[in-house]
Length: 85
Image (cartoon, rainbow, N blue to C red; front, side, top):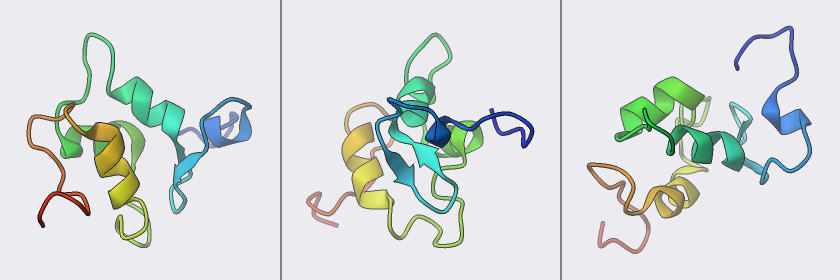
């Protein structure tokens, strides 16, 4: 829910912490986007659902943690810090 009139997930307890600080995307939001019948299968799909990596830093600070969280869950894996990239 990206509406400005309701509470965002980062304001709610038990969210798993903020993963993307620029867009205030929580671990719980990313996990929710990666599960279910219409789960995100690409980084682009994950961006559309959560706005992760779309903030001012363009993923500079959250990409490593996001790569670890999405390992084995995306059609094309993200290149993490230990993937030989």
